[in-house]
Structures are given as structure tokens and as C-alpha cells.
Image (tube, rainbow, N blue to C red; front, side):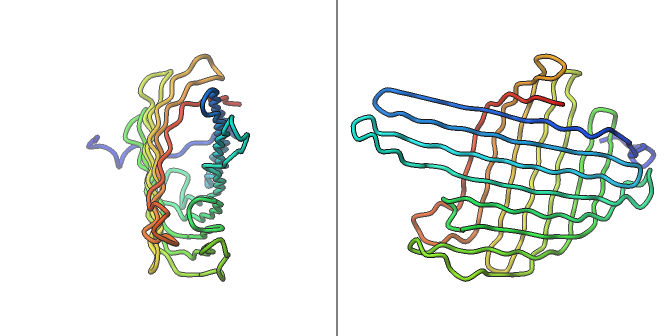
Length: 238
């Protein structure tokens, strides 16, 4: 970590940036599987504002060639959006507003949704490395599924803690790591991802990522607290 972090300029003004990821896997033989992963990221930095959004979808199916029966083994949709108001164009500090919505048929919840507001800070350690840190209160909505029956929606206050690091290793490769936890009285939900990408050309890159989602409370003992996902995707930036 650089000693002169406090003297570094954190202000940036950029055009809208967007990237789309796509990964697919198909197998045949004794067992036929079809797996699809898609992700869309958008971001924009203004003089006093910073916006970003994520849409992430993952689905996997398995077909028995003898019976031709298809079983869905994974089906998850995650959407989030965030805006940060910078107190000053060159200030590290900001006020953030975050919202997310998730449907995961194998999590024991029909859906989970969150809204949070609080304090954020971006530290740019050098021209290649920066990190974001956030903390603030919020509110969550979730609907459990017990014995295939949707339960009444539960609401609770939460504390959101989040951080991410972006490191441009070289001109053509990037490392990112993020961790976000929503701490509630009954359930604490934590999402994390580590990825590394390498450019194929100016618009296309190959990305390897490992992600995980953990819930401290699940509907029943047949559901795992931790879900992990390893993916290799093509990323198109436009």
C-alpha cells in the first residue's frame, strides 16, 4: 500500500461502459447436460455521481437419455443497481444507495430483495489498483419455501458491508475480487467472487471466475448453506 494514498486523485469522468459475458457447456452420452451463464455489467462515472448495475443469470439442466426426462439442477437470477454521490469530485467519500433482487429455485427462498444506504469510500492506490468500501443500514424482504409451499414474506433490518478490489495487472489482464454481506437478525447473506480476465482483442476477453453465495439460515436440512460457481466465459465490452 502506498504511503501517499491521501494525495491521490480519485475523480474520474467516463463514458457509459458495458460488458456482456456468456458461457455455455453441453455434454452428451450417458448423461446429457446443458449449462448456460450470462452476465451484463454497466457503469458510468460522472463528476459527482457513480452508477453501476449487474444482471447475472445461471441455469443448468440434466437429461436422462433413457427416459428423456429433464431435471433442472440450477436456476438463478440476480439483479442489482447502485448509485454513489461523491461529496466532492476529488473526494474519496460518497453516499451510496444500493438495491438487489434474487430468485434462486434451489436456495429455499422464492426471492430475496435488499435496499441499503450508507457511506462509501474509493481509494486509488496507484493507476492500476483501486478499492471500494461500503457500510450502511438497510432493509430486506425474503420469502421462504417450505415443502414446496411459499411462506409469507419476511422483512427485517440489515447492515450491509461490502468491498471490492480491481487490479489492472497488465494492459491486457485484470484481477477483481468482491465480497458483500447483508447481516440480519435471522439470516446473513454473503456473496463473493474472484475473477481474472485476459483480453483476446480490444473488445473480447476470456474470464475465469469463482463465485459463492452463503445463507446462514436455510429452509430445511436438505438445502446447502453454501452455493459455489466456477465459470469460464467470453466477455464482450461495448
